[in-house]
Structure formats: C-alpha cells, structure tokens
Image (cartoon, rainbow, N blue to C red):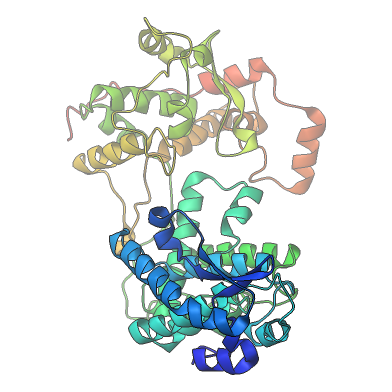
Amino acid sequence: MIGVSTAEVYTLGATNRSHLEKHGNQWRVTVFVPVAARATIGKAHLKHSLGTSNLATANHLKQEHVARFKNQIQTALSEAKPDDDALNEARVIRKSRRANLRTQNSPIADLSQSAIHEDDDEFEDGEAYYAVERAEQIEKSAGPVAAKTFADIAFGRATPINEYLETFLDDVSYQPRTILDLRRGFRMLDDWLETEHMPQTLEAITQQGAAAFIRKLMKEDGLSHKAAKKYRSFFSSYWHWLEGQGHIPTSTFTWSAPMPEPAKPSRNDIREPDTGKRPYTDQEIRQLLNGSPPPYLGDLILIAALSGMRIEEIYRLRVRDCSNDYFNVIAGKTNNAVRRVPIHPGLHTLVRRMMNNKKPTAYLIEPHRVVVNNTGERSGYAGKAFTRFRRSCGIDERPNSKPKSNIDFHSFRRWFIKSARDALDNGAMGFSEWTIASVVGHYDHDHSKFLKMTRQYAGPSSEEAAIACVNSVNLNTKNDISNEC
C-alpha cells in the first residue's frame, strides 16, 4: 500500500547492506534517529564500528548493535513530547536522503542501483530502511493513505501542501490578519483532505478536487460566497507562485473552476433591504457619545470621527507623531496610508491632554490588553470593547440575520468621508473630492485610471486644502437625546 515493503527492499539487492556503511576500509553500523528522538539522543544517526572489512562478518555482528540502537531510540521516543507530525518527519528523511544519496531525488526503486555496487564505500541509506519501517507503523495506526503520504514525501515522490508556504509569505506583503486567515484556510484544506482520505500533498490537489473543496466550504460549512472566494484567491495566489518558482508544472489551472453561485431567496421570502457596510448617521454618532463610553473609548471615538483614521492607525500614533497640529501616520494598511492628517480644532485640547507628561516615543494611546503576538495589532481589544459598547447602545444592523453588522468601528471613517462630501455639496470651499481621498489615504481607490494618473500628475493636495477638508467636518454632540443607552 505504501509503494514498497521491507521485504521488497531486501529483494532489491540491499539485503547485505541494511544499516551498514563503509568507513575507511571497515564496515560500521548506522541507524537513523527519528526527529522526535533527536533532542534526547543528540544525533541524527547512531553508529558503531564493527572492526571488519568482510561484509558477511559485518552482517553477523551488526544484529546486536542494531537492536541496541533501536531500543535506545524507542526509549527516547517514549520520553519525548507527543508529536504526531509525521509529515515533518518525512521531510527530514527526504532532506537527509538527498544529501546522502549520490543520485539526487532518487525514488526508492533506485535504491537497488546504488546498493548492488559493493565497492561504493560512500553509500549509506539507513533513512530508507527506517522510512519503510515507519510507513508500515503508520499504516497500522492511521491507515494506508497516511502511510503512502509519508512514504511519498520521504522518498521525494510528493510534496506537502505547505512545504513552501513560509517562503511564499516572505515574498508577499500580506497584513498579519490576512496571514492568519490564509493559515486558517490551509488548515481547512488539510482537514478536508484527511476527511476525504486523500494525501495532504500538492500532487493530490486537482482542479476537480479544488472545486469540490470550495463547494464544501459553501454548501456544507455555510461560508458566504465572499468568504469562500477569499480562500480560493489565497490558494490561487499560492499555486501561481509555486508555478513561477518551478515547484509545480505551469498552467495547472488548479483553482480556476467556477464557484457555486450564492443561494438566491425564493419569491416567497420576505427580505430586508441590505445596502452593505455604511457610515453612522449623525444621530447614531450622538447616541454613542451620549452613552457614557469608557474614557479611552470616548477619546477613540472622537479622534476617529474627526480624522477619518483607521483604528490601528490611531493606536500606532506616538506623541512625536502628533506635533505641529498634524497627525503623522507613518505606517498603515497600504502604502497610501502614510500621510499627514490635520488635527481638527475640536481635538486640540484632547490631544494635548493625551500627550501630557509622555515621552516623544510613547504611544498616544496604550492598549488595555496585551498586544496579540500573531497579529501585532495594538487595537485588537479596543475594537472588541467598542463592539460590545455599540451593541449595548442598541446600535446594530444585521438585515436578514447576516453574521456581521453593517456598522462597525470603521463606520466612523465612512462618516468622516460622508461629512466632508456633504460639506462640499453644501458649498464648502477650499478643497475637493481628491483632497478627501488624500486625507483618508485612498489614493488608489474609487477612481478611474484617468483620474488616478491625473492626480499623480497634479501631486498631493495642499496643506490648506487638507485643513479645509478636516475643518468642514462638524461633530455636534449637543442634542435633545439625553442618554439613549
């Protein structure tokens, strides 16, 4: 079931060479040490000189040493931390074999071609014998598919799906949260392959299989068309990168099959109107501010509403970035996020208070929980806390029971853009729609190719225009709504 058995290895002509290698003119025993046992044993191979140049004598003497080494390995494995990552072990075997075998990328069938030359003093392939034994153990415990996957990887016949994933991530510019989503997609793909009793290798993923996996995400797991399309895009990018790097054949079109269309409501379904993500209304803004949010959330709401900055951009501001009446955004979601945002007159007192008695390198806002290492985001807790507060104020919008609300923290940014646009429509002077895009860092969005090029020719909007844009946004919190939370 795994492509070759121990008996077949011996039949291939390596009977008198198993666990043996020439060292100088004499034979010595060599036994491969599994990855999980190396921390205890401290070696990749256990070796012992037999003091003879005669192969028949060496075969007689090796038995006790092979048995002793295997007992030592078993003891080390019993003391090691549990690790069922057989694919990682197979990778190590493959790497070691490629380094040791004279013929690179040799499949196990080629073992006989190397083994029959008894004068080849450098030949040693103890990993092959261990791999066969290990694959047979896996077959008994996990079944033939798992055993074949292990053997194919160990002998270079197949490649794990995520073999080159880390290199791929080094070559792309995904944000930390996007990388987490991508890794989640790979875990789902691995789980699906295991459920379908398919090898978790690149070679196992065909166009038909890829289409079946995406269909499963939508039809069985209930993922939206948008979410499933996102994961398919991840895999498509990875496969395209693999082709470009020469790791898989080109023009495989693995992830190009049409996706299932999202389910449409029947004629008898009564559906609520859903226009998607939207800005807050002026009343919702007042309602949030009158709802007595925690002080740090109140400050955050004011800065977001009167600057149009993203929540993580605000949490990345240091004291030195808030000088001379400007917020200097030095890093962000995109290259265009790096910009200067005039500080709204309504924020001057607040910003001075937040900067008071802080060093220039200190953050303007400290997170209220430890920063999550796998995303590096400083605003993670604040975003969740705001969601809880918003819901406590009864501000939510989930038409047709959709999983995510149409209004969230980012809706402050949408409100800022809407307010500046409305000011222009009502006769505000000194700035244009392009100025709004510059202030919020939207250089590459929502414009035709002609307008993008024209703006590049004209250069960024003036400081006076940016100030006029920000000052046109008015946040009137005085109203007849007492406390609606």
